Image (tube, rainbow, N blue to C red; front, top):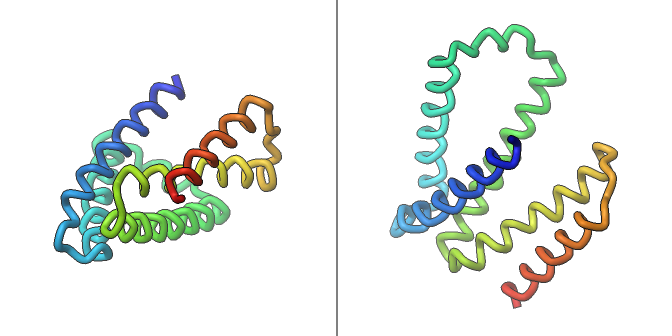
Length: 137
């Protein structure tokens, strides 16, 4: 079932990119990111409150909080740079280069999470890397 959620994530990421490119026309990319972030905040808390999932807040550990905060900072920086790239670049190139995050994630998952690099994963990551390099050049 994870793959269905991953496919939906990819679909909405693609739609997000197109909508963002149209939405940032003539707007400062940082302002656009801030506006988008407010909407995301409202939607996420709306889901949590509607599903009555706030009970989990009590069980958060210090480690949970630290890493969720760091993840939030990294996400914010990613969005800021992504929107700036979208503002000045072509969507097809920006989105593809952004997907280098997959290659970087694989590398970091091996180092920090002890995941095993399979041949299939290595080949897929290599193709992603080659595709990004082709588009950059």
